[in-house]
Image: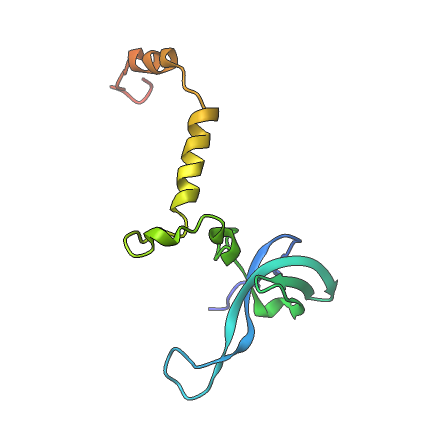
Length: 138
């Protein structure tokens, strides 16, 4: 029942990571001891053996050991300033997406302008015959 050996963690510059390296906060599990806040950031470079320089979303740059870091998806907790670009305070009470709705509308407008569909390609797809397989070879 031995576990297979783990491969070393591969962190690359620009990779999205998180780690419990923030200030001490009350433990959400209601235990007595405090825990560190999980911060998200991007790897800048390797600075030593299993040490990486990471720029966290709060702007702080720290050297962190790789065993503390967890690799995240690129979209994990986008920095808050990104959504602030499209915030519309007037719809705050009525729209749960008030921070980002203008960005979605802008994306859809740009998509309609720049991505065109050809009516003939749609008709061509409709006219394609569907031939169900009756045997393993067709």
